Image 1 (cartoon, one colour):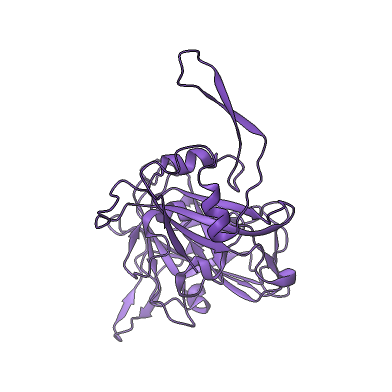
Image 2: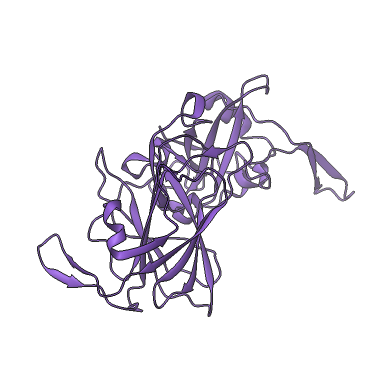
Length: 335
């Protein structure tokens, strides 16, 4: 379940470690320090001060800086321990939210969305989960965990893609979820690579109901115009493992008529194939080549018949969906 917290007054989390009581008191989340760091003093003496260093899961983000800056859309995963700082108990995925315009009591307070995540998918890491290619929390920005089914423009920083990557979530039901990407023509010439995530068990497109699997995947467009790509499932973090029993890719020049992974092969050829008798257990895995099929005819939900174009329409871009079956096990690490 997600929660929202806010600073009780402007700048309440500006001081080093000032957010720690909120994390421990509300979520039972105790952070381990990773040594200390120094900051310059404001005094005329120029002396520096030393503070405990609390890092996010990525091992690089200083949480003092993260909470003090309170930049809307910024995301950090927090590893939480018990009160003795001996055992990892959970993760908190914290997203900075824009200050609601109707919060007249404090229009300059910082607001955060907090999503608790389990350290594993289930006891013993045994799962039978569906997973989809999915935007990262940073790419979602303020749209993270939204229940809207409207197309979302993603915050993509990969060179050549700019503001030209979009996510269309599936109509949310209790038994079906997922979505697809629309990728406008890259602005950089030649071969370009896009980094995306994989979300497993994220029913109704809610990451808090599942988990981000490892470090996601990349697609490198070897010939964007003709719909040729190369996909790699990225290396998992230390201590994480997974077994992927099926991988299905949709890559072509029209939006998916439906999101039935069994029909993806009608539109896209993918090689090599992943099956329960030939699963993926070592990561990084790939590359898997994906190519849009030519002259595919299909019937829409209205009964009309269409033929897929043989090359990209620059005004639309290419459409990508990635589906995986985790039929063996998956021990996730937070994004």
